[in-house]
Image 1 (tube, one colour):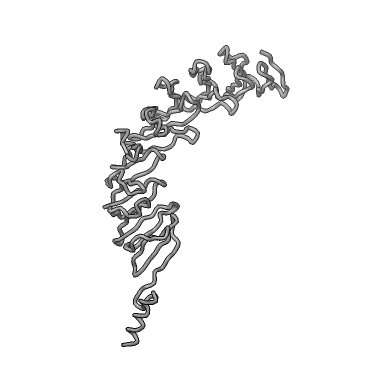
Image 2 (image 1 turned 90 degrees about the vertical axis):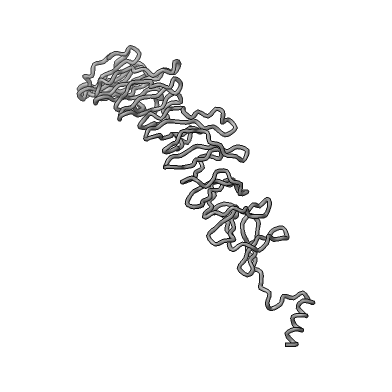
Length: 344
C-alpha cells in the first residue's frame, strides 16, 4: 500500500500520467483539425488548443470540409468553425447541398441551414434541392416551390408550384423547363444579382413538350401530338400545327422541314423580320436541300423535281429519277441514266 501511494505521488511530482488516467487518441480529421478522443468522448484539436471532449461522434460530410457532431446517439449538430462550437439544434440527418448550404432532417421533414448552423428554411418540407448557387427548391405535396438566397436569407419568389424544374439545355444558361399539372413551359432565372430580370412565365406552361433551340427567337412546342414554333417575343404560336418539324439539314439553320398528313413542305425564317414563313405547304412525299436557299428538291411518286422558294412554285415537275446540285442557280437531273444540267 505504501509503495502504491509513493508511486502515485511520484507521478504527480514528475508530471507522469498515473495508471488510472486514460490515454488521449489523436487522429487526422478534416478542415485542418485533429480528432481527439478520451473515455468515449471526442473533440477537435487545432492551432494548439482543442474543444471540450463532449461529443459522442463526429464526421465530415462527404466531399466537403463541413463537420457535424453528436452528443446524443442518432442526433446531429452543425459545428461552426468560426465560433468553434456546435449549434444547439439537433437533427436526425444532415446532408451537404453545397459548400455553404446544408439539408437537415427532423421528424421525417427536411429544412435548410447554413454551414454556420443558421436556419434558412424550417424542417417542414418533403425534400430540399439546390437548383443553382442562388436558387433553392423546396417540395411539399409532391410539388416544388422556388426560393432565392440573398444576404444569408431565403425568400420565395414564385407562388406557382412546379411538378418539375430542369435546365433547358446547357448552352441556354439561366433557362429552365418547368412542368405544371403535366404541361411544360420555360422560366428564366439569371444570377441573383440580376434577379429583377427573372421571368417566371417566359413561356407559359401550356404545352405537352418543349424543345430548345432551334433558334434564339423561337422554341419548338407540342400540343396534342402536333408541333409548332412559339414566338418568344410575341408570346404566341408562330406557325400552324404540324405532325412534325425538323431542320432541313445541318447547313441551313433557317430552313425547316414540316410534315402534315404524310406530306412534307418547308418553313423559312426571315432573318430580317424574324418571321417564320411557310414557303412550301406540305404537298410532297419528300423534300431535300440543294445548294443555297433558293432551290429545293421535291419528290412525288418516286420521282424528283425542283421547287423555287423565291417564286414559290415548281420550276421542274417531279418526273426525274434524281436531282442534285450544280451551283446556287442550277441543278442536274437524272433521266434514263443520264445527268443533264438545268439552269435557272
